[in-house]
Image (cartoon, rainbow, N blue to C red; front, side, top):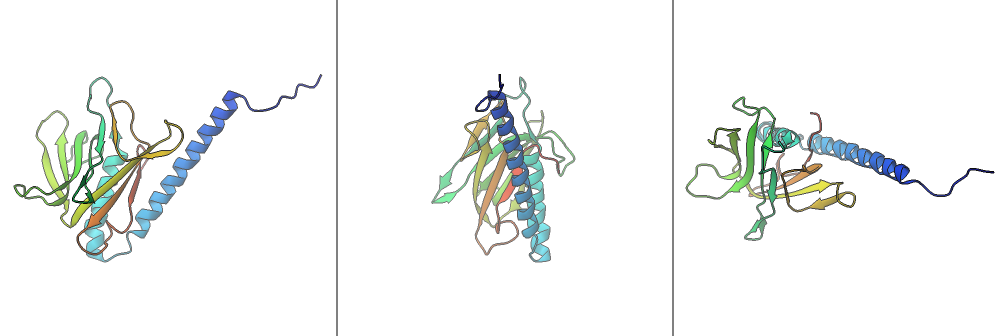
Length: 200
């Protein structure tokens, strides 16, 4: 008797879905590299500042991590709009090497509009793990808007979300779009797309 069967088994479907997810992540990584390469075609001063900000943000997000059982805060990203401008905010733990040499650091990325602080525009608050002493860095004072979105394949295939709050699951990728007061530069011309956990 012929042992042919019709259709696919559940294992075959899961393997096919896993392979397509890997291919999608690779494609997204290639796109983010192209985006970053094309953003470098600006003046030397823009490359120096905007390039450093893009690389730093990329490194911090790429190295985001969760510490189950120790960290109840997790990866938090709030979708916010003020005066018709996106002013999203992210907070996460990263293992990236920071400007002060620390490696395990809480990062908060936001738009600072507080008249009582010296920092303005796109700002990073950096708090080394366990110190409780955050410091702030002004990344770009001309940035007045930050719009972020997050993707994951865990929930019904690849889908983009406007916010992300989880202490157990990191997003697969993060895309940041910046709005500046002046003309487009190396930071604002194209979105910054980062695969979380991808090698540098």
